[in-house]
Length: 192
Image 1 (cartoon, rainbow, N blue to C red):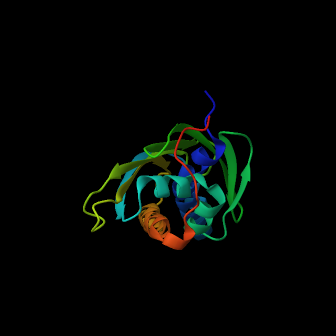
Image 2 (cartoon, rainbow, N blue to C red; image 1 turned 120 degrees about the vertical axis):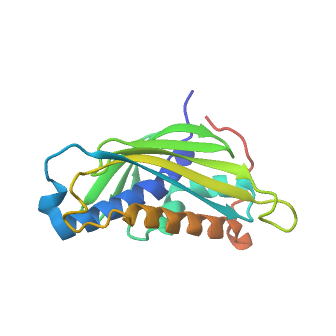
């Protein structure tokens, strides 16, 4: 089964860019400490946001990799490698994102093994009946696990940056998906 390349890449953009931006900022402030020896610590991010948009609208926004990248950070450059892999770059930091799961209007998952901060994550879409007065809406949830280099806090590197960047990306996705004049005319359904 081949996963649709756009759907897979779109979900990975938000977290990949958030982690890449944090890594670039950390590297600029303390490159020596960033490369310090020691075992990386596993960290988890769990964030969610509600949108008045339908699951279909949010899903198709997340499948549009270039549009999603612009929401996360306008400096991000994306190059599609194949149906499940894409290269993401912001400044001098680059990584390859691989889509590992795609269930239309429900789930997108990804992993990054070669970037400065290896991670994997998933974006899930849930009905949120109270987000919209008409009874619709979507709860967008993202769970991410990543390895944070040791001694980053001792070096003055802001370890809360990934949390804030992910929150900002989710808020932008929720707002953009709910914008009525920016919705693509697409039908749901697996395109594999």
